Length: 241
Image 1 (cartoon, helix red, strand yellow):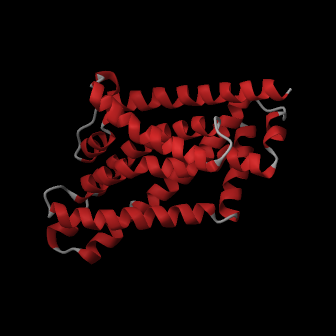
Image 2 (cartoon, one colour):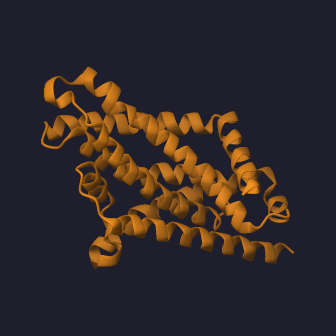
Image 3 (cartoon, one colour):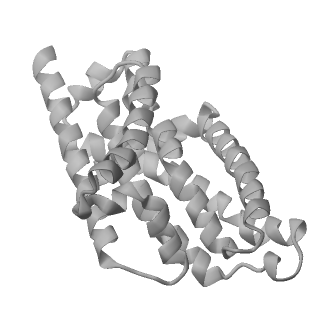
């Protein structure tokens, strides 16, 4: 666990020092802030602000996760430290876990900043009942989004182990996170419906409708993807030996 913390801390320091963390948060907050204000105007009070916030971020969260994970291994390759990292006496599963932990922390921090919008900004741009946000409902929606973020960042880490270029990682990640829900909705695979409609899961949580099944789905698939990411690193290690 100590090695995982060290690698994750190193990763986060690199994100902050290079300005990546700030740029990612600023870009995401600008995008979702504009979309949220537009959605508030379009809904005209038909959906509670906390539920609307959760619905919007469930749709945008895959983009944030892909951006947070795109540099995980591509940056190591560009800096020439990837092969050195692979040959260090650290299990590849720990390296994957550390990279995921750093990306997950970055994603949650950005999402937490975005959660200030319904609490701080909404009373400024709205009046009356439209300006009210239920903090328990917002917290429930945030919890659902945190579970989804764990899955999307795990998917991003897995994809990051397969490509050398950040551009290819980002393109493959976006294709995966966009195509997967559409494909699951098309084939109507009931066991994977929380992946097909993450916005519905987030809205239900914000409205007080809880189900254990989506949580189990996310909590099961995220470690599975990290396991496959570690095996992908194992294959690369055997090729360079």
